[in-house]
Image (tube, rainbow, N blue to C red; front, side):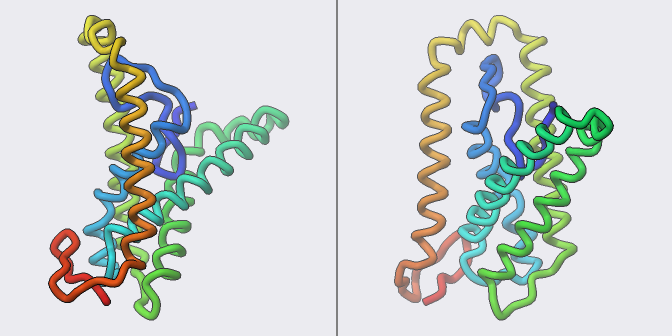
Length: 194
């Protein structure tokens, strides 16, 4: 099953030539999605700690996506009449991502009202980018088969760095907004809130 959006993990790793299947690539793809969605969340009226809240929302969305993916797989495997769920799952995943992330951002950005349109557009764009990355990886695997052999010795370290680096960034995203900041702290061009 091809899994889309940041509510679910991707089938293949982002590094051409390496076939990494499983949740570890969900974290780097969620980081990518968070950075893509960040400007849209600013437009949706998330005024403070936008990048950190974007990372947090994407992590929550990823967790919900794992659970939803397991439920969808169970339903389609146990009840053949729901096999069409495989066909609509990518679209449902994007919808779930929009709902979960908008809900989370609204809870974090109070009292501001987080806009639905910008949240939805950011999620659709990040999902399209994640799918684009997958298609690019598949293309590079077929166009450059020797690349897989060249990168094979580095597969483990690259996967560990991608996973650990992403996990560290997610941890920072929860710690950073709680830290007492000074007036001259700046986060990605945003004045930090006290």
